[in-house]
Length: 103
Image 1 (cartoon, rainbow, N blue to C red):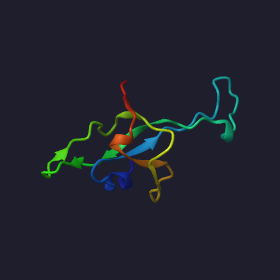
Image 2 (image 1 turned 45 degrees about the horizontal axis):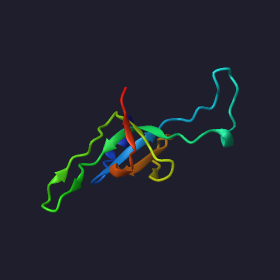
Image 3 (image 1 turned 45 degrees about the vertical axis):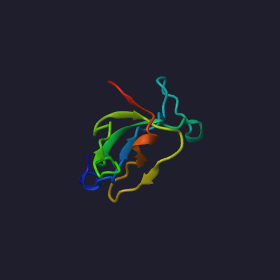
Image 4 (image 1 turned 135 degrees about the vertical axis):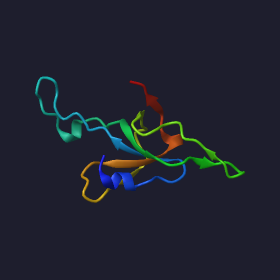
C-alpha cells in the first residue's frame, strides 16, 4: 500500500476500495478487447472510516476491515485518483457494499 493511500482516511461510514483488475487475457492466451471485458464487481478494502453516528453521538462500527475482499454493485461509488498512484480506487458507503467474500 502506498504512503498516499495511508494518508487518505474516509469519513463516517465510507470505505475506500481498490477494484480488482479486469481479466484481459484468457487462459489460452487470447487477448480480450476492452469493450468485451466485463465490469469488475469485487475489490479489496484499503481504508475504512470510523462508522456512522447514532443520535446520541456514539459510532456504529463498520463491519468490513482493511484487507477484506468485497462484492460491489455494478454502478455507484466515487472514483478517487491519488497523485503518483496509477491504481483505481473508489469510495463507497458501507451500506452500498453487497457482501464480504470469505477466503
